[in-house]
Image (cartoon, rainbow, N blue to C red):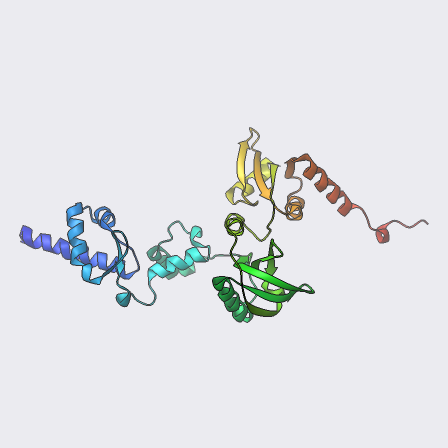
Length: 301
């Protein structure tokens, strides 16, 4: 039978081994992490940190990672980082590296149908050049849609599987599809990043930029289920749930044509409540599209 001293040291060894395993997978630890993970007192946690001090690097006040020369080139922590970077972490109930690795081990049990994309290998050099220009904050030139452009590049955006460059041209933030960029050239002309541009990029979903208009929409009970389970509109928020199951939502748009395309798709389940001018514009646009062209007009007998 083991005595108390032997049991105590066995627990210490198990605790340190588990801690080192977490560190090896890229986890950052501190005294709180140790206390919560193992149910130990702060004094014991400090002693454990002292025991591991020779293999730890302090990354911030009281927080530690495994020293760089002991970290593997690729670990489960990187897997979680990539899931966040690619915007797919939210697909899974748990998206820490270990949980994602477990899902991948059972890949035959899961199918993910996301946005499709063209083959992007041909844009590798362009993306590398743009990445350098964005890091260095230097302007670039290119030929786009029949016109020479001088751009201040800010960000690369993947929107529904296609890559776009968010850049400022003549004071306006615009999006440029990489597939349409030709005659690209970097310059040595530096520019000062605009904080308002960065804020707009951080708060805008999609590739439509500019002044946004607040819009109120009524959604039928039939469509409410689809609209609430996954937001369909930028900055979508629920305003009211009605007794018949329908809802009223708000959104903010910078391009009315994009909104009109969605409304035509969801007719007659979603309609504009306000502003009235936008509702009128949509009805006129819809009517114009429904009118027959000259070639479709009936001929006199």
